[in-house]
Each structure stands twice: as structure tokens, then as C-alpha cells.
Length: 477
Image 1 (cartoon, helix red, strand yellow):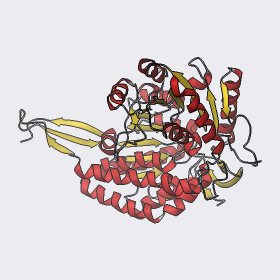
Image 2 (cartoon, rainbow, N blue to C red):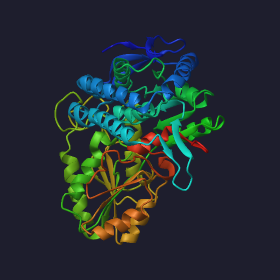
Image 3 (cartoon, rainbow, N blue to C red):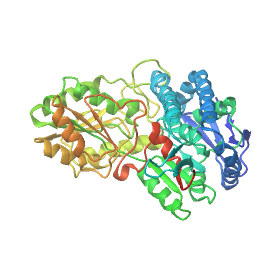
Image 4 (cartoon, rainbow, N blue to C red):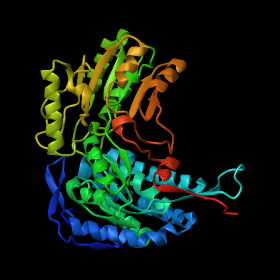
């Protein structure tokens, strides 16, 4: 797969007007697998112009027509599932088993949930019995810039593209330059599903190039971004001059609170969840807070799980974790592991360097540090790699205070057999999501955070609302 990809603009594949090229690298082998065109201002302007021209027609379609188009897209997506998994595995290093299941499955799941939500969503409804004749209309925001990350490519792309299409918006997608190939496949599926030209456009490029141009563009009405908090702040400032709507899903530093009465698999489950996708998930439970009476036992369990976690190339079938996405990411993780040593956290497993037997690729040793305190770098910074930190607590109040001691607020976790305590703790945790006792949120549950983890919600009806304006009309009848 050594190809020069183009941009998808106004229903056609077009060469870049003013961009250069960039290699897409397989993180398992460090070899180039493709070359993409990096868009520039002219490419961005062309895509936005196509989306702007297509907006009136697409916005005027009936919801049922848009839902039917999404149903066709779902069938196309299912038909390209293996191709999509292969692309994801090669571009960002997800083991092929994970790519075939969770990675591709997340995209299908979000598309299904959007269709379900759209079928029952009241795009038009009366204000209420107290105001006969007043109507509320939910109308598409307009032209949307969708900027997505590399860690869960189809998960994040579909969380934005599907509800934007269902709402009647038109869009320009800028996928992560490290992992653009799966998004290019989605553009082919959009074409196959028969969406009108200009409704969906894709421009490859750097965040500093295409991303910045989109966020400042006067003809873009909304920016939906998933990525780092640093980039989210920059996007918000850039979008402010044109008063765009901005939806942000940013970083996380989730706490996993394990009480002494938690089930026997709680620690093992927490370590594996932290290491899943090579630790490259914004909602990963990276801070394990353990009640002191079982703390040393938990540390030993974490050590055992980490040492038994296999690491290997993404193309090998199995339950191993793969590489991290890039040399840059590998170096960042190594730097933060070294800071753990320097700040005298207790290394329990893993550490610096490549795992034994691997001489190339961006592989990180599954690492556990114990006795990590709030002033340490590993407590504060999002590592985005297979690195777990552990800390003891004595009381419920201390556990809550420690969990909330972070600028982030995406997902926290609670493990206890005491349902009343679980509910008390969940109510006091400052995060957009709380998962208890290993139970994930249901289909269509809202995904998003508080504080520096962002300000929007994706998924289900909440995802639709992100792309809709509310219009109040009096004396309709």
C-alpha cells in the first residue's frame, strides 16, 4: 500500500493544489506504507466552498431521507470492514484482532446508534401546552469542520460524521495525518452510499496547516475536535474571532478507585483496561487508587498482569498489545517513564527501552509505578501509553479528593460491592463519565468530559444535538 492519496472534495478525488507529501509509517515496522498529500489553503478553501454550496440542499432534506442514506452507509461500512481493519492496524498499530473487533466495531456501533437516535428525534415539536402555536425547530448548524485523532480512527470519525450527516450539516473532515487511510476508505463508502456531492469532503493535512485554516475559516460554522487539550485551547482561540460553535473532546487522566470490598478481578481488569490499545485512549484508567488495606496485594497483582502482557507486531493474531503510533509518541513516553525514576516513584514492572525480543517498531514495555503522589509528573500528565500509576488511600473522602486532583475530567472508575457507596462516590467525581464495577456505558450513552477534558457530548441523541441549532417560532398555527 504505497500510494499517494488525494483529497475528496465535492464528490471527487482531486490532487492537492498547494500541499506537499507526507509518509504514513507502519509503527510495527517503521516502514512507509503510503504517502498522503498535505493540503494547504487552496485545498481547504475548495472543500469549504463545496460544503457551503451543498448545505442548502442537504439541510432541506427530510430526516427520513438522511436516515436512509445513513443506512446505506452502514451497509457499505459492513462490506468494507476487513479493509478498514487492515488499514487501521497498519496505520496506527492496533493488533489485527483488536482492529477487526473493537476498532472497526466502534465505527459501526456509533453509526447504528446515530440512526436509532435520529429515528426517534423530534426535529420539530410544539413548545408546550401552555403556548399553543409556538414551535421549536432543530435545524443543522451549517458547514462543520471535523478534526479527528489517530488513536481510535473510526470511533472518533463516526462519532462526528454520522450525527453531522443525520442533522443535515455538510462537512470537511481532516483526519489525523498519522492515520488517514481508514478515513480515505470511509470517503469511498460515502460515495458508494450516494450522498450528494459536497456534503462530505476530506482534506488531509497537518493540524497547523489544514486544521488551523478550518478553525479560522469564515464559512465554517462549527468545529468538532478530538485531541489534546493544548490543541483544543488553540482551536477555541482561533474560532472565537468568527464566533463558531466549538465542541471539544480532549485529554484525560482517569482515576480507578478500588475499595477493599471490590470483586477479585477489579485490579486485573483495571490494569488490562489501562494497557488496552497500547494505553492510547483518552478515557483510560491510568491512575489506580487502592484502599490501603489491599494496596500491596494490588501492587503485586498489577506487577503480575504487566509482566504477562505480551507486546508484539500488529499483524500477528493474538491478544498482545501493539506499538504506539509514532517515534514522537514513543520518545514522549520514554521521557515520562524516566521522570518517574527521577521523582522516585517505585517501579513495579516495565521501564525504559524496547520489550525483550523487539528491535524495531515503537513498542513500549507495559509499565507500572507504585507510590505515585500528586506532585509527581506521572500523576499530572497524560502519558498516552501503557503506563499505570498506583496510589494508596485510607478513606472514601480521600479517594474522591485524589481522583478529582487533576485538571482533567473525562472518565473515572469505581470498584466496590457497596452500591450506596458507589453512588455517593459517583456523584462527587468531577468527570463526564463514571464507570462502576467494570460495566461500560450503554449504546448511545453520551461521551465527553468536564474541565480541561472538553465541553461537548458525542453519541446518541446528545451527539445529534451537538450539530443542531434551536429555532423558536411563535404564532405558527
